[in-house]
Image (cartoon, rainbow, N blue to C red; front, side, top):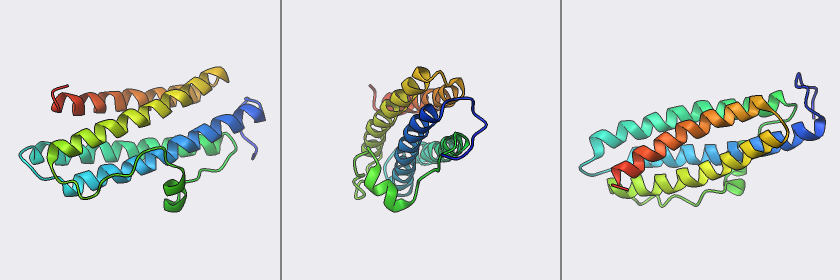
Length: 158
């Protein structure tokens, strides 16, 4: 661990940086999957979903950056190469042959649920270590992705 401006113990900073890197990996994988859906979507909902998926991807890229920078601020490194992400992501592989609009919606909604589960696990760790800054960051990402998931599930009529 590197020197950090945080007042947390090194043990706490290490644990939090580890969980932030896990969420970064999932977020980077999710970003690439959203882009695959964005590029390949076909169907009657194309005009609405194509830009919506791009909005999700842009927002997620900013969240990924914030998660990585928080890990580094805590004194760790951020890990996110394509090879590292492929080995470590908790998300299932995206079926890249998918083109139907509502199938993309379902696939993304399921992956958003997995991503949210990990974010909540990480937020719980932040709460246990009394790191309000990391907790707040994770809450912001959770809030955004709960809304995104609602959009997708509403599109499916769920």
